[in-house]
Amino acid sequence: MRMREIGKFHSLQAIAFSATLLAALLAPMAAPAHAAASCGSLISPYHFTNKHRKAWLVLPDGRSLETRSGTPSTGTGTYGYAWIPSSKSGEYIWIDYSENSHKDWVQCGLQAMSSTGPNYSRARFKAASSSVCIRAGYRYGGISYVTSWWCG
Image 1 (tube, helix red, strand yellow):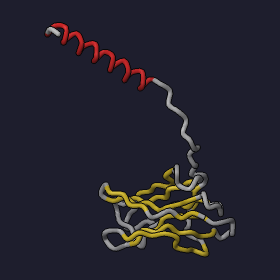
Image 2: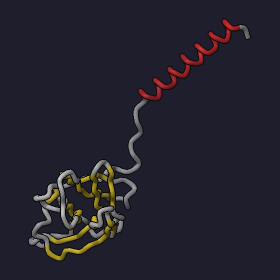
Image 3: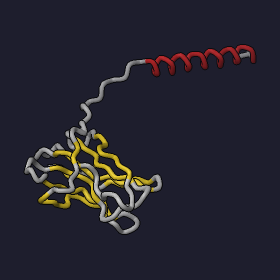
Image 4: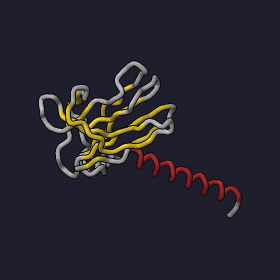
């Protein structure tokens, strides 16, 4: 091929690539295989009874991030929430909630912590099903940590 033909060939390749990329970007996105779970109604675990640690992770500063369960004082089912023994400004805590054995999940109750505020996330009702799962999440200084999943 001569130089002029090579230049035309590369230009045609670039146009074809751009058209393919544009078509891919404009194509409708496929629906997810599983519907995403919903955070539902979140409540404060402050007055919970029957509190139990379900999963935990030791943070770099030695504190434990915990996935906990508890029952509201009204006795209306089991809820899951995140907990740390003490909190400081700049930290965030939340729970991840899944209804399909943690194939898909949604982040619920993300809240900024402070040294004088609560050291727990909002709580989410958890059905007694092995496919319904909750884990605790924590972030500080741009680094996130999560516990293992509590299912069942």
